[in-house]
Image 1 (tube, rainbow, N blue to C red):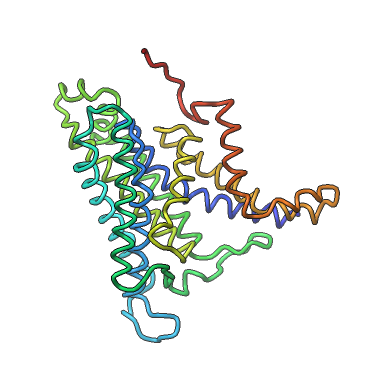
Image 2 (image 1 turned 90 degrees about the vertical axis):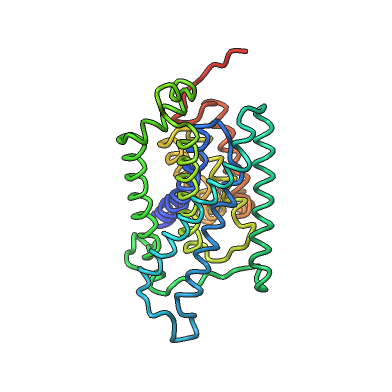
Length: 327
């Protein structure tokens, strides 16, 4: 029982960290534009595919002794920097071409544009990999990252799990310093609060919005690399479900709130992981035999049911603020 609960908590938190990183991309953009960037899930999977290509080129295949000869941690750093750079630039292009011309349009219009961009990116990624005869991609994660370095009760923690925690912690610290303790962060928050007044104070709102999209895209790329290492089987459509869950995590925590996105991601990860092994409790507690019918494939349904129940009692999210709009 103790080992099962420990595994649920550890694996749930690791999954929740991934959701939180992706959710931050959604919440950053929403915080400044009140826009749901549904193309963020494709930006995220672009980072994962970049990680696949970097590991494929620089890391030796499991059945081949040769390779680039680079240190695996250096290869990981290359994948991380490249994915964050490309995805940040991609998000800037998306904002410039698909969202900026519609900034003063009714809110439904940029939302539809975001969905359209999502489909376009999906097909572009499929085309780029399909030209090379690939669809389902198996990420060649260096073997050293799959090494178990720590065992908590009966749960093995691998190097890639520690990397996930360390990289996420460094990213969150850097994001907090940028947003809350820098001149650029104050400018971003000013534009988010009142774009017109910020412009009168000499702040270039277009530049701040583009920078926010770049940060959100970089976070998506970072999440994509970590996702590719944790779940090394992916394709051009692999970002859809994690993207929806990460968006749900952002809503659960309070859309527009950075701490809320983190808390929502962690909560959703633990809830989902708990529901995924709920049938195991039927073996431990015979009186709960009915739980045996709740298989792992129902964990997504259960997670969203839990999300709905929480939002019924806290519509603004766990850390969100209640706002009133005049009509």
